[in-house]
View 1: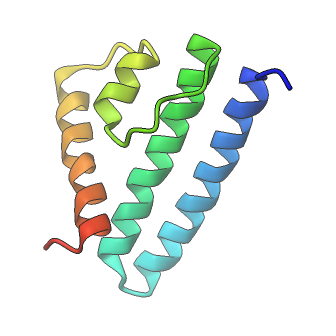
View 2: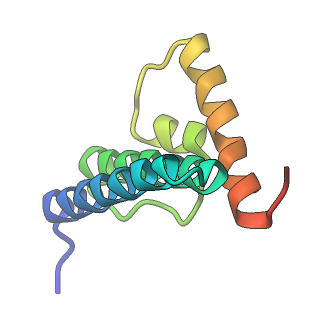
Length: 99
């Protein structure tokens, strides 16, 4: 079976949209930490979809949003990079139950 980058990118996007919907439900229920974790996950999946489209290959199994943005050849500002650094922390807090 051959790798279809466009189909993979659409799959990543669909998964990201589901994560955002669930994140909103978490916020409504007061589950802020898990909602933020899901926001990170949605961004990660969107970026992985862009990596597929840009490189024509599977994205690496990493969670770092800045590295994924670089692999997708996105031209991000310093402010955007700082935001991604902050959002990366949601991944750690949600995954490892850190305050």
